[in-house]
Length: 133
Image 1: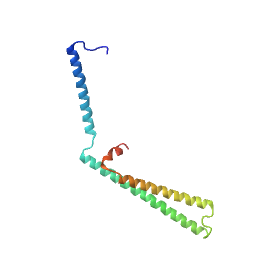
Image 2: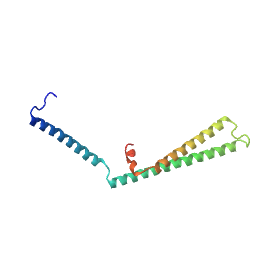
Image 3: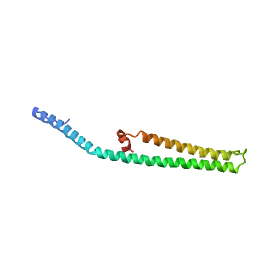
Image 4: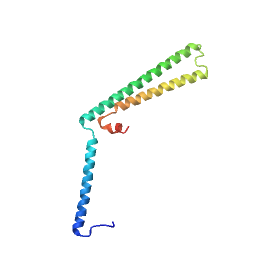
């Protein structure tokens, strides 16, 4: 505010320069945003990569579920063989071990279901979510 145009010509020129500056900055912003946005082929490639990554995560999660289920079955079979028929899971330590194995299996199953749900909800317009990861 200390220096300002005093004549009408200076004020008009100053106003014109302000508008011109706003237009130049807006054109620069539009140009940069257009260059950063995916075109159609890039978008399709990105979506394909995301789907493949989801499929791999889902496969790994399914493998974890199967492994924990197998370990739970082996543990149950081992405890049944070790203890007599009526004394199955008499000790609290055996119950705790079996409960922990069951908890781990259920946790892995919930993780698998969550990944499967995320994969089903994946759509073309959700690319911004994955770009922010």
